[in-house]
Image (cartoon, rainbow, N blue to C red; front, top):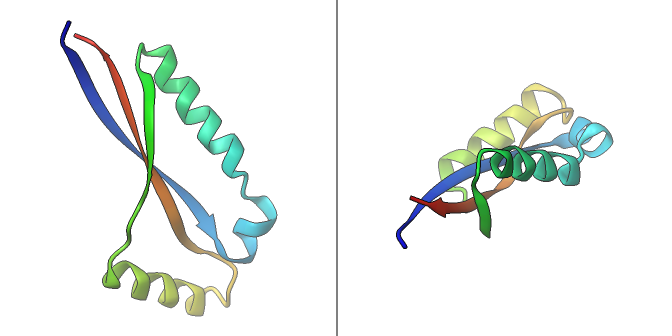
Length: 83
């Protein structure tokens, strides 16, 4: 039986607002439930590896928002389902 794969990126918020209002468990759970309802099965989670440009953008966002918000490292979720 052949299978089809799909990769979904899940990003989180960083900074002070991300620490206060961010729910990584809730976001991960909602993404997995959404994909499962479409017939996709979760296979693996891979930590996203940001490059230098993304790191600089994060620092700029922190400086502009006075530490309130920035992008945070997320995950790549791999799903599969039968063809």
